[in-house]
Length: 128
Image 1: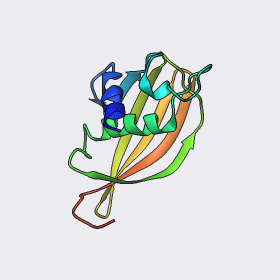
Image 2: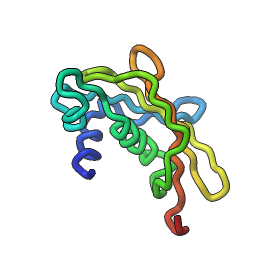
Image 3: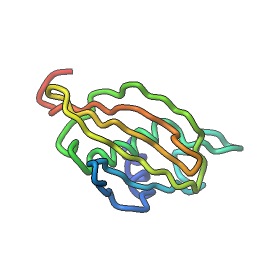
Image 4: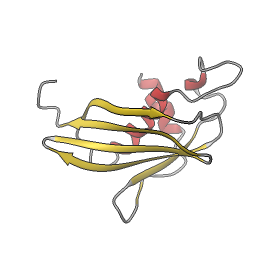
């Protein structure tokens, strides 16, 4: 998994930015030879959902979730297929629910919203 995390970081084409509403965003562009396209699918590459989750973690961990541990993913909806060389904007809006930090995540490409999900983080000091 660490190779995938590193390759996702290398696919980032912008730094993490924060808009006036506090939403953290970063744009990625995954080349045709990106490791994540390997088995998804040989004749028509599609960016796997797990890669979209890793990209969202990349954004979240450059913000309020930097010192937190991913506990779970909630309400995942994958709506559009993303192919090689598309600009993919991943944005997270953060909220606090008890001792958990929730990153409400949107994955967008030029055709619209490709995925929606929540990454739920804890401090790491509690048991799962």
